[in-house]
Length: 237
Ligand SMILES: Cc1cc2nc3c(=O)[nH]c(=O)nc-3n(C[C@H](O)[C@H](O)[C@H](O)COP(=O)(O)OP(=O)(O)OC[C@H]3O[C@@H](n4cnc5c(N)ncnc54)[C@H](O)[C@@H]3O)c2cc1C
Image 1: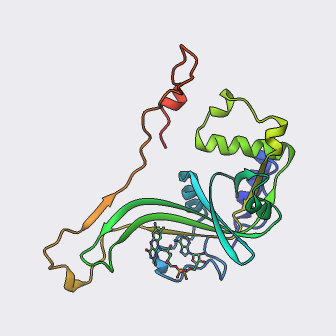
Image 2: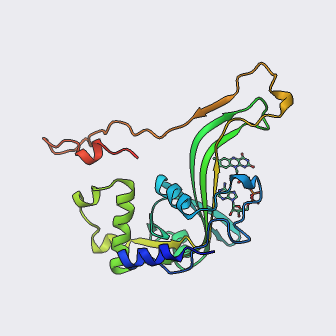
Image 3: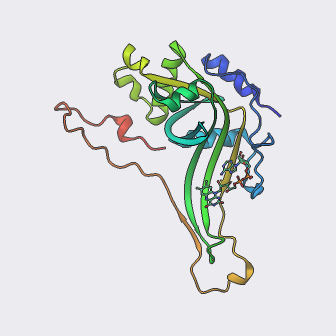
């Protein structure tokens, strides 16, 4: 099963980022089929997009000379790709841009599940894994991708700030990764204790975890008279 219609729709709207690989339903390839606790697998492209849109940080893996490295990065989803950037001097990003195979993962932690046994205690989460090869972006695609990443972290900010200079752009590698092979796992629900533990006189339940943005703090060298813009003050996700 594919959802290349998402791909085509995105291409029509925005042009360049889409690599036009057929987007399989999450968990639809042998290596992305969730085997452990498969009832937590979500085989839905909408859920894949929703988790990616809700996250701010991804972890990107690359193996170099047999050693796996995992790099945390900011990112954005654009249609059926994810976009992220790093230093042109980074050997890991250089390897990714050259097409090294990768696993891109986003995890949102939603709660602690306190069961009556250590074995059944767990977490509420939404997580995504994407497998594939990155593609380096240049020119207008690169500029649009940098804006997309900024817009994902904080919409409207790009319009206020200085755009990258030619030198800054040269120092930055921007890559896209198709969502063509992915998996989504979502864990929710109450503790799943074994019947023999339910009579134990110990509290069990879920402690939710939510994202909170604190009050903005002025830069020490802020020009006098400037106040926190509305889009920063009101930014919640
Ligand atoms: C916040 C958090 C905490 C966790 N803590 C633990 C822990 O302490 N111990 C533990 O064993 N497991 C934990 N998990 C679950 C863990 O991520 C794996 O799903 C689990 O260990 C099974 O791994 P596996 O390789 O045997 O799965 P398999 O089902 O064999 O993996 C097959 C395929 O399923 C997909 N897949 C597997 N796990 C995930 C996932 N989490 N998200 C998206 N796709 C996935 C991948 O495409 C993978 O290639 C945690 C998950 C999260 C998000």
